[in-house]
Image (cartoon, rainbow, N blue to C red; front, side, top):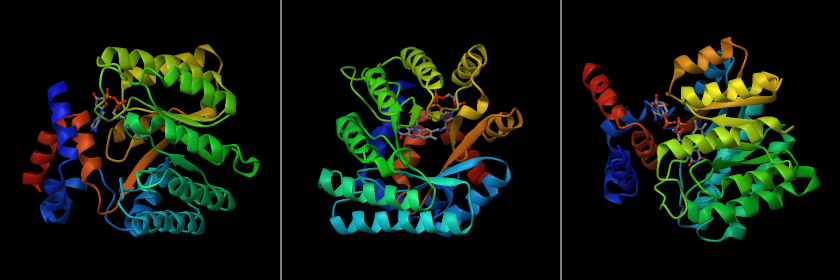
Length: 308
Ligand code: FDA
């Protein structure tokens, strides 16, 4: 399994396959398992349907590692439109943003400026900006940017970040974020990382996820636990009930198209659930990371493809 994971993560960086797939009809059809559609309106329609099931949404306009300032500007504009549209339609949805899509690889100051403007707009609309976490070469710069934006008194509580349980450094990062009162989304981590920075064994990643979840649950800030793993969810529920933590004080987060049964069940049982809804034509790297997480999805996709 780790080999297949590495294979799909390597494919996620393949430019030729990416450009072929994103343009092909078959590719678009396959991606629809995990991607809400190509346009803003597709994402808003899905968000509305998800909200109707009592589930909150975070919207991700797909794209990462832009190579020009104009591309970063265009990507930021999509998020500004989303914030307006979500407020106009009174959806229960916030936004998830990757700093490399805001130009981080061109200039950290540029990305920080776009992210700060989004946070200001989110504040006006009573919304929230989650900064996704990318590979470990970007962890420190991402945390620094989020901390600086959050330190502006008017933007306190409007921006949060993601921490990956596979990194050795994550407990220290969480302790710092909690000291600053910053909202965290905890996930296991989706990139290929060397053993020098990340636990290579799943059992260690899982154990760290449970440990870090407890730190988040015990804090007074509202955090998100992003996982489809029954064992992680059971551990969080049991910690919360043992410590008298009300289910309204945190949320579980899952990806669009993954474990819909579990999403609905948690809502029925009184938990807050948020679904990450990605959309847009730059779906290829996101899609490959989803296959890396669960190579069995390839068979699932193939069966459904030939059936329909
Ligand atoms: P794990 O991979 O151990 O899977 C446990 C079980 O969940 C599987 O046995 C299967 O049943 C189910 N499952 C998991 N993935 C599935 C899939 N793709 N399809 C079908 N079933 C699946 N990562 C990151 O590095 N930076 C980020 O910013 C984010 N953001 C983010 C937001 C949200 C809302 C979620 C849910 C996840 C992320 N991630 C992420 C991805 C995360 O790091 C991780 O790769 C995936 O969530 C898979 O890990 P699980 O915790 O689900 O468990």
